[in-house]
Every structure is written in C-alpha cells, then in structure tokens.
Figure 1 (cartoon, rainbow, N blue to C red):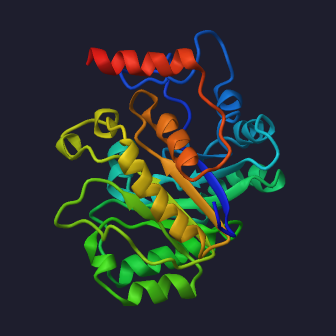
Figure 2 (cartoon, rainbow, N blue to C red):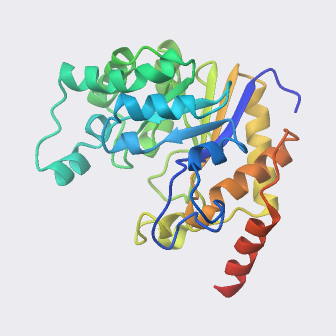
Figure 3 (cartoon, rainbow, N blue to C red):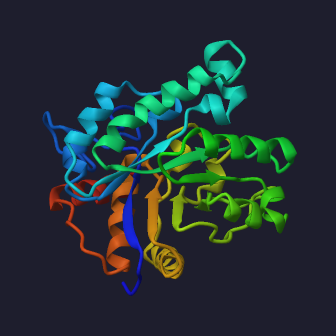
Length: 293
C-alpha cells in the first residue's frame, strides 16, 4: 500500500463470549485460551470497549499490555459518563456530573498503556442526539485537555456537525481527529465522509444493517458482513486518507458472530497488507452457520 502512514487494523473489542453473537467457534477455537493473545496473532490493534462502561482496573490494563506483542496499540473508548449522560444515569441512577476525580480515575486506567508504549488513541463516541452547539464544542475541548497522553478521536453522528464548515477548523486547531464512520444513513446522519483534521486518522466500520439499526439489540444491530465489493470501497477510503496522515486506525465493529475479524482480515488483504490467515476450520464454521441461517 503506497502510503506514509503507519496502518493499524483491528476490531472494536475482542471478547464476545456469550449470546448468539459470540465469537466462540467462529474466531476463537474451542478450549481454554487467552483471547487477547490469540487475537494479537492476527491484528496489530484493538479498541478497548469495556472502558465505556467503567474505567478498567490498572492491573487488568497492565496485563493486556504485557500479553500483546511489541508494536501492538490499543485505542481506548472513553467512559460513558463523559459522553452519554442519559445512558449513565439509566445505568447508575445518578446524574453524570463530571469531577476532577473522574478525570484522574480514567487517566490512571491509561497509565499502563502509556508505560508500555501501547496507547494509540482515545475514542470519544457521542450519541446520535449529540448536536453541534456551543456547549458541545466546549465539552469536546475540555475532554481533549483532560486527557493529553494520546490523540483524541471524536465520533460525531449528527448531521449538524458536518453541515457546519467551521467544525473542520475547530477540530484541526485543537489537533482532534474526526472519526470516519460507515453505518446505515438516515436524514439526521453525519456526512458519509468528513475532513481529515489531524495527523492521526480513525475509521469505525459498524456495518450497514439498516433494518435492525434502531430496533435490534447490541448484537443483532451489528449483524452485517461486508461483501468483497464493499470491502474494496472501504479500502479505497482508507488508502486515500492514509496518504494524508502519519498514523491510521481502522476498526471493524460488525461484531456479530466474528464478522468483524473476518472483515478486518479482508480489509488488510484488499490493502495488500501482511495478514495471518484465520484457521480453515474456523472459516468453515462461519460459512456453515451462514448457510444454516
């Protein structure tokens, strides 16, 4: 791939042990294994999504860093208390009032990754209801200043952000990465492609399951396997952006039954990047279960 960027391709999360959408038998083999160690044989990055629900204990994070090879990078999803106050209140029964204590607690969870040189980016994903206004911009600016140890990438999903030409300047001046997303599009959705605003680029590919997007649960919403033609289109976007930045992350979030690692491998192949073939028995397992649906 002709690009100056360091390319990191992986999936959003690595542990899906239960439910219909499990990765057991689709990506992970039977028996007791360390899933992260196994995953890191195939990919050079992963998003930590559990951090969205609570700051992970530093001992866990240190263990994750030690179990992955040199050069492996983690992207960390910011705690929902900062980005999803309504969801936080529903989960904990209290208002999401941010304090310095919260900032310090989350920064502590990042320290092991900083120590091991494995912190790649911080992802602040905002809900589709998060609209562009003065308060929202102040919040993004405050988050950026509160977590200075790595690049901040913001996932903005309401069209009011891409409709405002000034947002590109705002993000660029603050060296904040505007996350490029692929997901079903609706009238209120952000533009399909947004400007490059920093030296780091960040893609999240959620799948295009429009039918279940609003009515499905946290598993069925992501029941979408990108076709070879669609992967080619995503690869073209990644390639074009990679020529403009120093570091690029691309994460597959269509996690139903290990569609994500399968498509992540497809993306690496399309970009002519080195890849490890998923064992044949697991690929067969995917094909067989798709045929049974």
